[in-house]
Image 1 (spheres, rainbow, N blue to C red):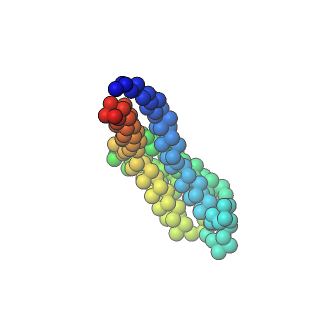
Image 2: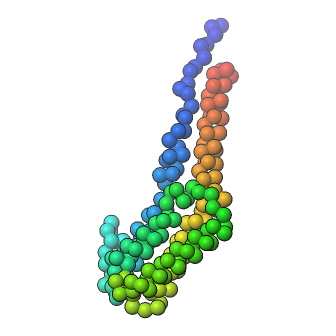
Amino acid sequence: MREEEPMYYPPAQTFVGEKGDLLDKIRPDEIVETIRNKLRGMEFINGSWVQIPALKERALTERGAWDIANLMLSVSSKNVSISNLKDDEIKKRTKAICLQAQLMCLKNWKEYGINGSDQLGFVNEIILSNTFITLKQAQSEGTRKMIMGTVHENRSHAIQEEKSRRHSWIRR
């Protein structure tokens, strides 16, 4: 009986780009663009942002929406998402951003198109929700651990598959 030559398989994938691929999928800044357009009284319809006439009176001006969005962008980034924040840091940062937004809205109320105190509360709640939730994802390295856990799980699975392939020729 002739001994079979072992089958050779290409080396297992290296997963160098896998962490980068996962990071590319984390886009906390996308919601800021959505909020900016919603504050302007716009809706995303058929691939583009369209002004809704019924919301025009309640909408912020381009400048107001732009300034509020830029304020939120300071925490809605990949860098922040993969940070390691503590609860007190999250609360202090959220409070500071909300306070700054209120000051900006009060000082620039005409330029921002603010016509009532209800708009101030509305803007505050949007900033509070987005900022707090975005920062909470970074609490105790939450997003970073998720990425590392996913990469580790995929590597383990690939290693197991590679071992199975290597040993399968022995069983033949």
